[in-house]
Length: 287
Image 1: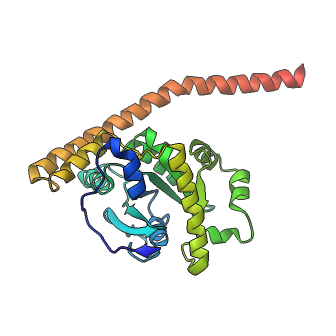
Image 2: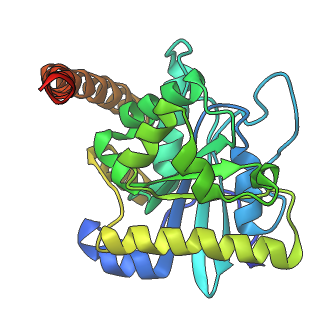
Image 3: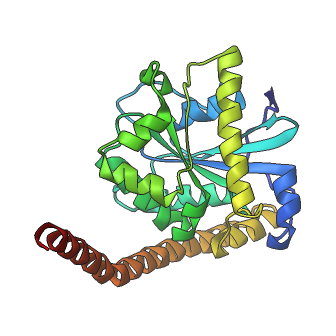
């Protein structure tokens, strides 16, 4: 992978949503999502084959703001956006909304893939919260563009990632993998040379399959379009920025309410399914 050093809030070359096919061919936009400390920054460095995102062991989150870096893979430009702690249950203050707004600006008009990073063998309640936050930040429809990325693949030893996923007793992880249509991959972020290239080839194969399934459409919504419009104006005046951040807050709150409404509609159906399952089990046992 060849590096193209760049780190800015620069505008993107792609046009409108109608230019989806051209956008897909010219640049692959990736957002790293997940809980703090899961290895997002190290994963970004692995994808770009260079150390551009700060990554180290620390008691507090190292990534303090959104950052975009670029590179190429087999002749195609890649833009990777690293994210701070916006996928957790912390107080939703103005700084968090600013971070979300920056994420939208850096990835407008929308990402082709969201890499949900989690450590192999350590999918916890915090990861489950992060999955919900992805839906609140980007909308439930974004899950069609999510790939689960397991770090610390080396911990498998001679084992298979497919076997690990198939045989896990972690029901939350099982549910996530099913929701993502079995789109997952593993990375050893310490790998170098041929091992690094081989694992990136596997990841890119999953990404290309995702793009094919989505007919090369990237994910977008109204807020991504607002972000692109702000970019088109040279990132706007201070007043335009304040207006944009207000839109961010309103948009996120609406998506949270939409998610709750969807869950309330599905809850009775889930209960009915559980009752039906146990009735069938009882019928088989006694009749």
